[in-house]
Amino acid sequence: MTNPSLRQLDIFAQMVAAGSLTRCAQTLGVSSAVIERDMASLEMRLGYRLFDDIRGAARLTPAGRRTAQAMSLLAQDDPEDWAEEATPAPTPQPDPSPAPPPALPELLLDADAQLPSLPAAPPPANRAIILATPAPVFGHFQDALTAFEAANDDIAITLDLSVQSAVEAARAIESLRADIAYFYALEEPAGLPSRYGWSEQVNLYAGADHPLARAGSVSRGDLTITPQLAVDPRNGLRPIIDAALARGGARLGPVMLETDNMFDIITALREGAGCFAAFGPMARDLGRMSGIRRLALDVPLPAIEVRQTVNERSLSRPGVQALADFLFL
Image (tube, rainbow, N blue to C red; front, side):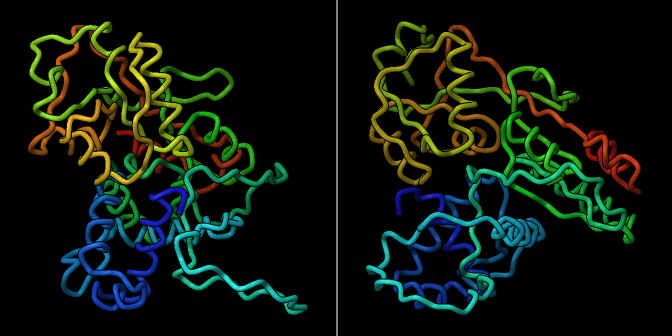
């Protein structure tokens, strides 16, 4: 596949369908170690665990169930052909009958998918509250969301994990794809009323033996000659991280690796291939890993804000404002 993150999400869907690591490995024709590695990498990117005891019963965590439900919601969009690593597909034959809906293994979460433009009609009063949020932000308040649902069993909540930036949040609100949306930004965006939730510091990481990792202070000049490792350009986090680096005056050297496969990033870091910018749960996990260190920058990079916006057309519906306030506390 062209994007390893899509492969990991496909494997997650296959794991849900198979119900065990062994059966999933047999279905995909790969080793259990490969699937376990990819699930660990995906959990690191999302910022929360998907399975309890993946080597055993492989039960979904509450967050894992939410993620599977969100993938089902996003499967309504037409995905790109993401099975490029599989055996070549046969030439499609004309079929006059309508295609059946996709089964669970075909459900795909694409954080960069273009959201369809829907008419700006008032939302039905009885539909579920749609909460759009980056996956790591959902990991931040998943316990609060569970508590709200337990206290309000008459309110249904649907999770959409496709929104990351202010532009995506505005599109989701305008199209009625979201009642409440969280998004990343460097400041409050114009034209989208929102409130500040918290900030997540952007840091740079390198292998423990890298010269910059051993330095007591790293200047902006030091960074210009240091190769860069980065997430895939199609990842919604990439422009957000690039904007933070630009605002902080951190011009890094040439990009040596672009991938959403965190195990590849970690391996390259430990081998001294360059430095990698991260924030949020991903930065937290990198900082705890052996063989990787956070660079001691002489001037910190800008923090990325997590902001919340609420669809004004949804405020008349029961629970929308209450949920927005509850998650914001």
